[in-house]
Image (cartoon, rainbow, N blue to C red):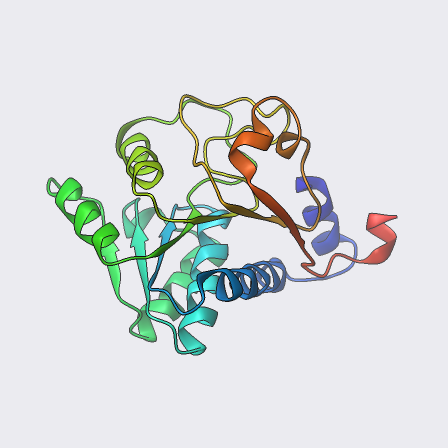
Length: 210
């Protein structure tokens, strides 16, 4: 999938920003139908998965829903398309909570209290190491919240190749797979954590998919 994304940009000239826009908008459609007007908290990491989350938050906000963003890493760690989409969400005055200081636990608890539906946009398919620190606490708290969770592409903490768990993983109600389903959705513990699987068309050229 990473190779397909790269080839779509290099060989077909499709900007990576457009692929992220399509991914976030498609996931927002799924979240809009599943949340049914509930208050939504979009939990974002620093990579492209977090960027997809910022896009989804923007589209949900534009549809009139109560949406907030919880950003786990420091803002300075955001790069490229993810940083741009964070900036757009910020300029739209979508409420954003940061988890970069000593009272992160209290901020996390307060954010979850005010949400009925969660969107997991922390880690994507590139994760290959154990989930530690604030991310471990964050995923554990999300799983224990009892709220339905929509995962962006793959539940954070789940290996996209073999379905193993990197210490801890989000247990999603719905997973919005970007472009195509991943092996990890079906292998190992993947089915337990993926929940209902839906594939989002992000605009990859048909010749690539063929």
